[in-house]
Length: 169
Image 1 (tube, rainbow, N blue to C red):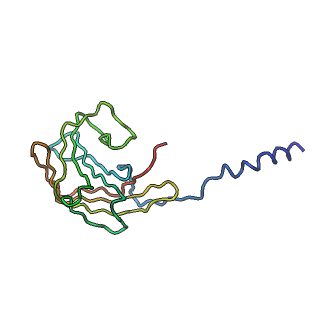
Image 2: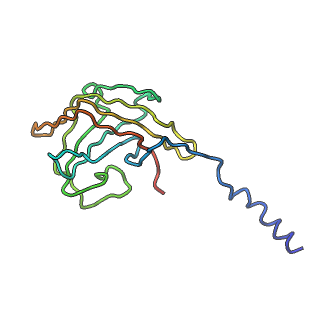
Image 3: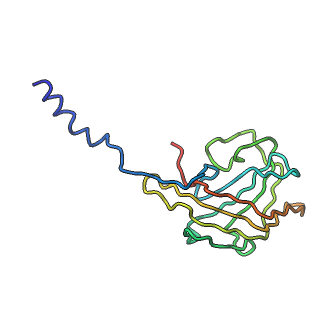
């Protein structure tokens, strides 16, 4: 009788502890050097700068991206922001994303892209499980200029398989 009573009390809670029937299939090589809706970033590996991050920031709602690449001229799309930022010390993400903020990190100089092309596509569409998606972004033949008129030319910068729009609990 005790077992029946215990079973009767636990049955209503059984449905509350079920995991959602959700599976996310990411492309091979997916990485977390991205965030928001969306920002993708990477260390800028040129010898001319130390402690630098290159990034592209896009409002996904401004573009009808699909799984095919679409090309955008940076000079004609101010809603696409691409910058190279050098910092006072080494950084993983330049405080672009809220996971891993470094309060002692400050920008030393910022170069903003004034020309070039950005090719973008959705690599994995938005997941119903967690609202994340994966993007590919390629910056080509871009000219970055700082406030003093100094230029950095980038032939190609790839941001491939970047998961974005994830939430840190």
